[in-house]
Length: 336
Ligand SMILES: [Mn+2]
Image (cartoon, rainbow, N blue to C red; front, side):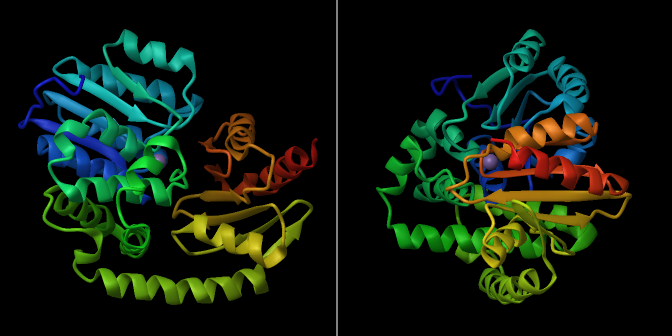
């Protein structure tokens, strides 16, 4: 679909990433454009979520990176969904040419670039429609800021047309609200979907989300406590520090480790209810290692799902694999 195409306004679904502002903003932008029904998910459940999506005229899948372990299941789902409608895959995580061509072969429209985050890719593609609401530009910028993609060419240009401090506030309130709502158990997904829809209706900005300032305040207090906890309970292992946490925002915890131990990489892992750990890794700008590639290699070796960007990555492993994961990570980080 190009931006000149008439955008459908009925029987559309969007499946997007629930964990961060880029995923939620992407869902909101697609909702603004098409009134799409929103389903949010995470890497470990994306194929299951897709299996519950009814065929629709148009289906958008946003901000959900693919890897060797998830790809076959994903391909099966988009094939099913594509038999009665058009599937659009919009993403910025690394995507092999092999995966891209297999998706195209089953009729998926692949709109992919690593240059900008997903919400900015959507804004750029449908700018003509989205610029009718100034709020949509704010949401796209929030995605870029929280994905650390705000210095990329298009994002930077958009951000420079708005007040930077105002945008930082909106992005932070959105990210902190997602983190707090993400902790509310079984209801979390539904609440986040409602929030994405409200934002996509174009009548509210993140700071106007119900209880947004309370969420932000609560997260800031938790963050202060986590900063202390990282210092007390984190452990250093060669080139990185790690910690086990109950926090859903494992990415933030990983950053606090970097600061507390003065290491290039922080690793935070969390039990996810089953026999698994969800792991987030973060590194400093100065680190030369590509965490996304490293985690992809380790995950492939452990037959787990994982991947990400240069300075931010994640994966999900069996609990019994933790020792091996940490050992492989140190091997990778100590290699020149
Ligand atoms: Mn993203």
